[in-house]
Length: 124
View (cartoon, rainbow, N blue to C red):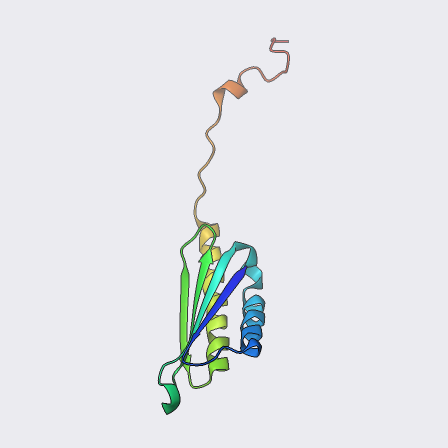
């Protein structure tokens, strides 16, 4: 699973980057093989004014399925990351379960293979 992280309105530190990567690996471990890549956007909406303005947006690109987009806004950036990761986990589990429930096309019986089962081709 490839993870790309982008920030707007503040400097993305290595500690924050490591936290996000660890948090996403933990949250998405059950569906990791179905993930093609994960994009994370972090932003400080109000800048220095404060308030509930730290946004974490996560886009999950799944193999064989539609993208999943999660967004959470909180006063604390780490809390926004945690909540978005939890929601991403639940969304991916629902998506995987939905894909498992879809009817699969059945292979048509091949009449050529059904005629003459023995390897010699004679009717013994």
